[in-house]
Length: 329
Image (tube, rainbow, N blue to C red; front, top):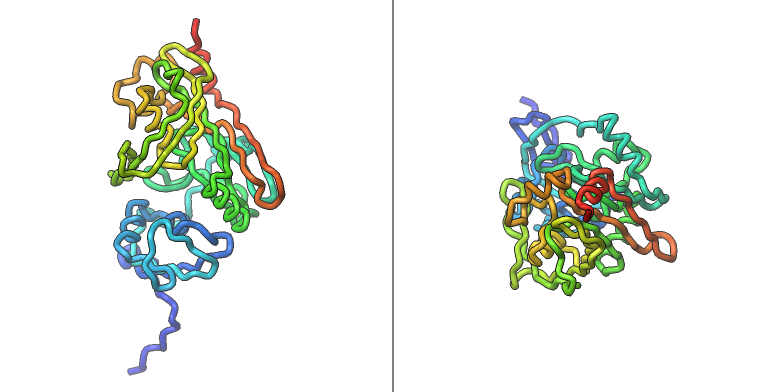
């Protein structure tokens, strides 16, 4: 009987969904300095987001043989070992339909050799995950294959519209993400909140603590043991039973603006997660059940040149219509 051939040293995997195998992923140049969780979300197509976080927490994901955390950074050439996982769906990522492709192309606010800024549509996730098999980044990669290094620099909630920054190269992404970490990026949001915003309340300082995810849904609560969080608020316009406010987050916590606004007694219109009272009548008056949060402007250092980049995003038709319907008579 012939002896089996010697091992090549490379991991074997099977295409059979019944026999998933260990996989070793090598980090490409354009993926340099990504968080481990984001790297895996981009590489493990069809694997549920909750499963990815579970295998990281259990220590089953290794970077160059060492245990890692979700926020660990990967570098070019790193070997990331992933245990056997079952995918929820097989094959290539779904392609964006003609209407979505047209919306995304029309949403480009600024196209630079190193980055681009989109006016993200409300209701569209920034990446595929729980409840979404196609997000902005996956769709844009398919629409523009000439940008193989296209990556998200930051995130916006699915219901939030407005300025979304994408990097075209690993070098640009690292510099832009460094700018976010060093608080060199100025983010301005506009939101319609319920009730009358207190005129004297210019800033909310309240620590936030993320709660365990349930069914893929994230929730954040005020907690002294959480991470420090600060948001500046200003009144832009008084509306019927609501207020249009400007919000400038000084820190970058999950759902920060939404939780801070709710803590002031003025939750965002359309925020069914943090609003304690039903908003049905006001939503009907506004003509929509969307989350009325809009990333209105970004100001950030150019990754390849000296100087700052300033960009603003106009409201979409639904937001504009709500302002008209809620205007004081």
